[in-house]
Image (cartoon, rainbow, N blue to C red; front, side, top):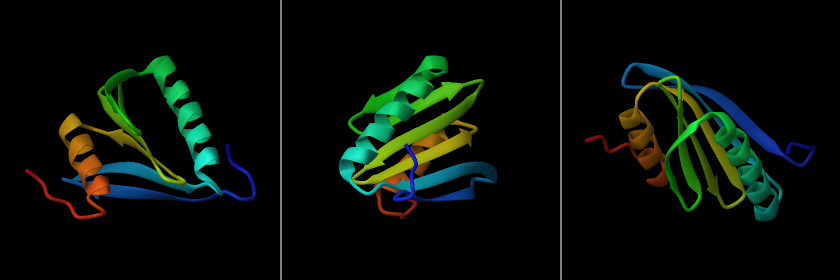
Length: 104
């Protein structure tokens, strides 16, 4: 679901001495973003275990690595290669909290 009206970034991220990758893709409308979220979800559901699924966020697991996909308005957030469920949950809370990391 990428075209000339789609913008995005890809970054290497580090949390708790663990590296993983994150993409943030901005679609021209919420409808385009929703379609991309559904397509991305269907792709990951084929070969990954669903760990948590609610509203606009899904956490997948495969080969002891976690993947998060999240829909937020016209943004699709994809975080891959996370090593533990705790890091997945903490990073997801970080995203939900607007970038403020409150670790337990």
